[in-house]
Length: 490
Image (cartoon, rainbow, N blue to C red; front, side, top):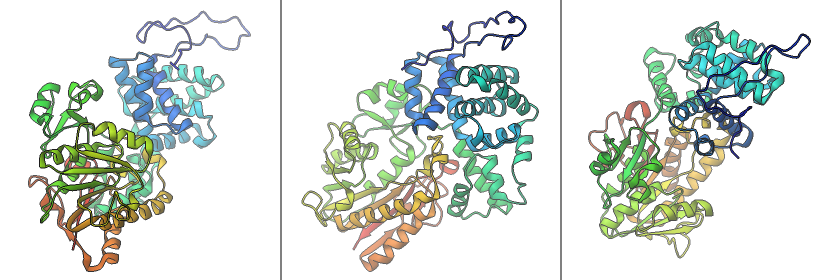
């Protein structure tokens, strides 16, 4: 349902009119004022994420569309919703200090309104008086009894800038560098530790601290939308010219979309291109470009939903007279894959990838190239999913890593001797990456060889480390933090 303003709308930029003061003995000097559309939509998106476990990148576009919020107002709503969700842990620490109580003791509607207000005060150029006034209007509309409380908390927050608040609520850098980084860059501490371990960086040292800080800061930067020009349907140069963008730095099919909604791009609507991070393109291309001896006709995408990598591999397969089997265990995601690969030599199977190498459709030693884009924590795409850093917990890791290892074992059964398996995760967490590969190699013994993945990536791609696996990073490569390991079955 569309969001209804507190009073009949006169447009987001209309001049507000204060009502005359109420007579003595009234319950307040002014009648409620309307909430501007941008902030109301931002609030509804944030509330849906917390109340309904919604995803911001799905619910916000719907709210903008239903409420006909466009242009600068849509940009403001997006900035406020994504920013407040991304910085939630940091904002909560400031709100708790200013309120003198834990945020868990604040009514959820008021709490979400305060997060939007605190974000404006600490992270935007919205004038303090405007941020306070509009947020109090919002809280009055969604939690009337908390309006006075919200006003007091926000005015307290205006007394310091972000740096001063962080000095007040965060441990000193030299006392606890992980806790300091976590609050300064709005990440849970366990994610900070995982990134530091993956980067082989010690945050207690100057260089190590700087590297981890760069990685965390990149998670908070607004990412460009990356498009993939499907081979054989449109070139990256043609697509870049059509959208007014730039060809990607590393993938021959990547284009950076400077602005606008990807759904409005004609090439996307006509299935000549699709939205796909350049890092995802690179790991799929690495599988396609790794040499295999002999037959090269049957390819397998073992965890294909929602279909971006399957579409790219399918387009390449069409040029090489190969065929791709795309496996997805969830029926609705399998339908998304089917839509993504329409017109390509791709067979979509609704099945459990762990059964690969043990069925007639997915026979043992039946495939020349296999992609395992394994379900993971998604820590590599935090910049694109603002709420996910606060939803994930360390307790998510054991079931995920067990599934990842089972899928990789199935892929190694399904690939023929001499064939190649690409193990990919959108996470830099070591237990989802290096530890999984080490454990797989230990169990496989001499039957599996770990290939140096750097040789299958563009020569101009910098900072790939010592191999043989590769970890991409937003702060180094401008991509999501994709991990890649290539294994050849002997």
